[in-house]
Image 1 (spheres, rainbow, N blue to C red):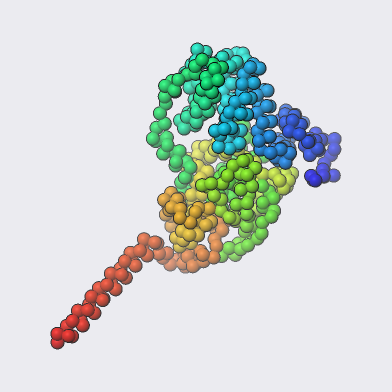
Image 2: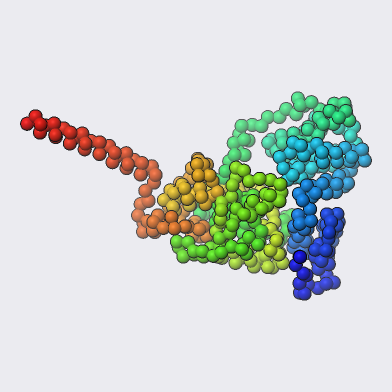
Length: 468
């Protein structure tokens, strides 16, 4: 059974009509048709349009298995391509029968293989000024220079992204050669471009993030909801709430996008050592559920068992969700990764803070927990979702700021402090020195040295007594 349409909706409004049709739909084709109508209808607001499209995504998952969804998406994408029937049939065979044999997941097929091949066909049709055929992929009609131009535009100049897209297109081209549908495809030598070492280091820095000080965090959150061109108004407050969840929980950015409103509604309230109320949310269940629906598995990057949302942030989220009219099954943060990265790029320019990344919030959270817990690595691994033997937190995420600044960030931005932090927090508040692991190690070494010297002196005294 699906929820009935609420009586508060005017049945003559387009929004209400679409809502009813979505719940009454029984096939993927019906939902695809509704999605096209909703995207083009000027009589509904952007917020209503967004909610209806997200609802279609939920209904698709309830009607079909992930593979059926992929097949339906392949059919609708190919049908809309500026290509001949010959190429459309060829693409259908490749995407449904050949590409899945090597792809690591259905999600990878949908978001990487299908989208990039379709984008290349559209780009090539624009360049040719006509529908593309299979023979247009032959080396006699397609140069390596043209493919490099497409890669440059599609990857926005990122060498690693360029390399991944090239791999997808070359696999399709080499399959065409193997099936004797074309004679040759541009050789590998035509695509020699170097992924510089500094680019790899920059990519690693982006993924690991940087420690952000209190003043930097205040500037980021102050400008997080600033209106910018081509960004819908309903997304602006959501940026601030999403960044707030990343900072106060330490969740990985992709894991936070897996949360649904019902995950918050099913949580329970607890207090931390400062007497503040937090909502405990089962983040592991949410991430595993979403990964399973996409046909993926949770492998290296495991989510923490629970995350803790401060009361004031939760109240803001509830008001926002209610105002948007979203239901329990809706995603809490229906934002795509590219939109979030563009927002970080805008904030980097607006704040003047270099190398801003979504992982900066996790990096800062890890440092705060490490300092406020008295350098308790076991607690940090547990709250951050790292394995018990992982060296990642200490090798990459933990940097040193003053304990006073760490506690101020925890209080200002609602970072949950469990009972293991009580003694250290009391020391910080009383102005007492917090002993670091290095200082503890030196102290233990000194004690061992003094104990050994004391034993040597006792031996000498006993030897002198025997001689006397």
